Length: 126
Image 1 (cartoon, rainbow, N blue to C red):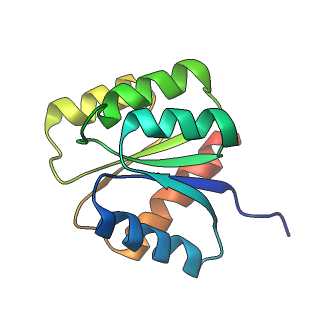
Image 2: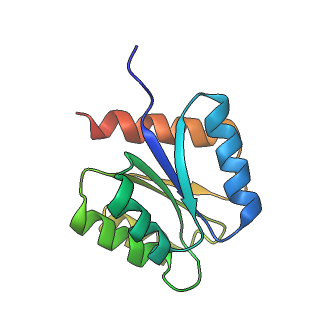
């Protein structure tokens, strides 16, 4: 059996990070860390090279859209799944344009998270 990919969770909301961590750990995913904004996520990624990043769109210091663009420029192999409570057409289009591998709208449930993760991971490996 192959090990689950290494996951980084990026969201400025403590509750959202805790919820995602619980969902992913229940399926034995390797949560290697979390960050509260895009800038902190880039520092963490440079040190740890996760396989998958769950990235909130709206955060302080550096939003998820800017962080997504930088991640894809530096580490195109990393799967990035965007998360938002504000699924505006602009956010969705910019996420796709910047290389997002998946998109989850808050509020979400564990089935939606796991389905999006599995599809993004399988499509990446093709």
